Image (cartoon, rainbow, N blue to C red):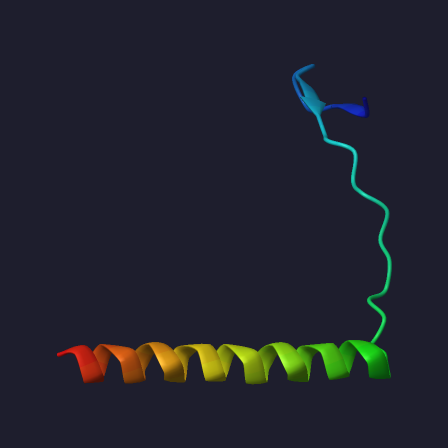
Length: 56
């Protein structure tokens, strides 16, 4: 554990920082997957709204 000593002899304990990395942009397959999931979510919500309106 990385300790530092402050004025007056107090010890200060710091947590280990995680290794940094750059995020990669989504690939074409991932973009297509996001589009399919978005369309599916819209269809699902639209169907639920239709059922709620038709029942009431």
